[in-house]
Length: 496
Ligand code: NAP
Ligand code: MG
Image (cartoon, rainbow, N blue to C red):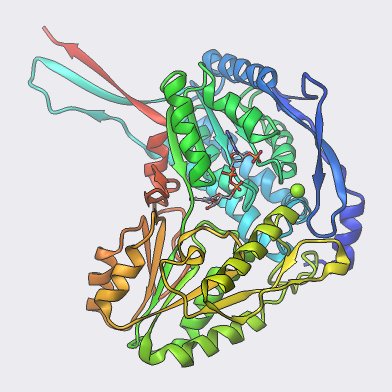
């Protein structure tokens, strides 16, 4: 790892890709419009980025469709497509430091995690789906002897991925990894707050041999570029990660256009239940703190609702406070920093307003709650802990997307499960216990796509990830996600 000083030097000599990438080339927005890309580390304008609109989306869809129909990728032999994606993964790994630096400058996350979580995660995701390509078999149905029923998976065609800013490349990779593996052409719409890494990645893809038109990026605003993708008559699927509110728009866009496939990874309000039979309360406190403060709480699965059994409440909250103390915001370019800035000033103000709401609602603020490092010009908020929260309060029901923990006390298993499930979300739930029977029984009753036992962020690429209830539709990761980017064709052959 380099030092903060070295990262600052690298940052000052970086050149940013700031135009759309369509059909293998960087192009300005047809309108000529741009928007400022601001670093939340210090408020500096990094560059001006093309602001894509319907016309640019049309061009990207044309390029993606032409590439798809040409067969240059969609009909490539599986073993060759595998090799191409492995080369792509290797090229991403070669640019690990640069891509991580872009994530850090653009959205404020600590450089250490940008490398080890974001970019390493992108590399392993692309590798995993590349490796899968020539190991997935199609099916023959158990028909009578007078026919052969072939069931084959075919790519959908043009897949758009509309992604948020909290893990800009990684959320994209969970989608373009399997989508490309299945033979689709993709168009990525990064969040307006963090477009830089996706724009650079497009060029890396081209250099690694991904054919022109297969990997396109249209930066811009949701209401323009995002909506144009959602409403496009020639986009076959939108794979979305973002808020529940915007996720619902995509269901409407599909209904108002061509009935495109929609998959949604949306918000969460993870309950994290700590039972009094958990023996290692230090590990539980570390997991609880990291689970909510990691990435400055800007994580869909952030364990924002801490449910503690009443007899260990005082002891446990003290332990979590100690963890929070070790996670004070620092310079994101310093490799020792565990907590960086919020993604931008708007998000910071939103978090501060929720802290005010919590106090007005009568919760007790026991740690943090303030903006810090004001002299930097950046957007930093302390790790914040509320105690005596009632699950009906807004801070317990609404997704804050910041480093704010709500502590709720419960008496018994029954009450814990009831409170945990009392939310519109169902992305993840966590529980800490040393009783194996309780772990299984409670896990079954929790309405969430992922249940973590004795952890807050378990899971890897081999297991599906996604939400129950209003946390989404469909799953990322694992071969279940691969299936999502294909459609089944039945070819029924009569034998005479
Ligand atoms: P967001 O506001 O919903 O935006 C997500 C993406 O949709 C962005 O690219 C955005 O573009 C675009 N968009 C916004 N409004 C749109 C519209 N009217 N039509 C079409 N597209 C539109 O979410 P965010 O603030 O970037 O990210 C935070 C949210 O993501 C949280 O709710 C979090 O829980 C969720 N998230 C979920 C997961 C998961 O796997 N379940 C993972 C990470 C994050 P702009 O950049 O212009 O706004
Ligand atoms: Mg930015």
